Length: 248
Image (tube, rainbow, N blue to C red):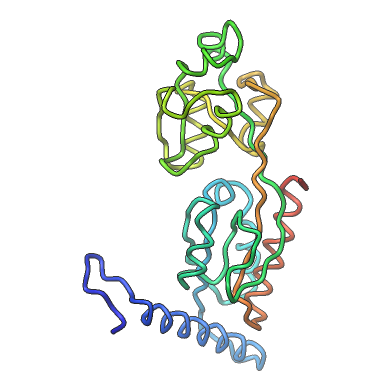
């Protein structure tokens, strides 16, 4: 049995193995045709997993460069960096940006860099909620913006200051750019990557709430499969990541 007749239908473990094999064969066929100059109009779909903040900032330009040279389309799966490795394990994707350094079975790993987050708020929000300083009492009361229920960055930052996760009121805004916009509009404070906060910080529209950023190391994991196309995609993404992310 390869399918479970649920809603929606999902693959069994055996079905997942069949899907992985089919994707590997399609990729190898594409590489073989390209090698003999017979790629023609055949387009291969490459499923990749990526975290929302990378997708919104640095991840798309390297894919555009590959797509300009090769007959390829990308099927992107967005998930938290702590969970994208699971999509590799299930065979849903061929490669992923992940916070997991240990290789998934059957995969190889390359380091990308560090996505650095800083706690920020608008100047008016800070004046209202942190007039007496960014202390535990103020943080218990001030609204905070989370990406979704699996986003624990703000919770980690609060824990450093002895504030329990359940204390402050929380907004949830599950889209990277909209999350940044929510912070910039003063809906609450939140941790933003430098890509999204640098301009507003320079302009004085945002202020830092502390000098202790949270660094999230990122890695590129891909199937350990001999494929010129997959390696070309990896090289572009790793080069871009190492240019754009902090060295850590």
